[in-house]
Length: 170
Image (cartoon, rainbow, N blue to C red):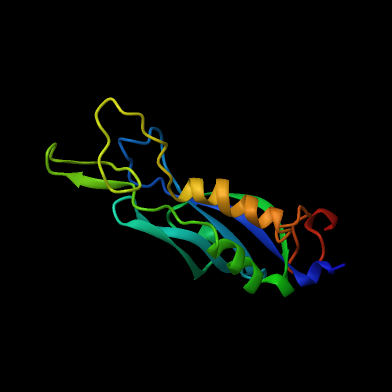
């Protein structure tokens, strides 16, 4: 079994709110998986999808300072820990195999507005049922996090303190 010092804390972090979308009600946030690789300063790496609904999205990983230091920080939720031996290679492998949201909208010259499109790129008829749009939050919450948990990369443990102790024990 790994010692606490051999594990990194994993969080779901929300930034925003982001620009509203008339086709998706309610406030929207950019939702990511954040792995805290440097517990002394709280920095680490963000795993997320970027892009938009007109061109589609792609999986991306980037370094990040402590999320709370961002001016767009909204919330952080502890998910568990990942073994340092599995990070980043296995973690990236699982995330990159989760299909990023494809193109889901296009400009319709007949109606002079951007509208939802079918997977083949054709427009829906006005009375035709449309599936729910998939954005970064849906990818993170419905695909990436469940896949990481199923692969046992995110383990439901207590958060790790910078000195390697469980935070609950400190």
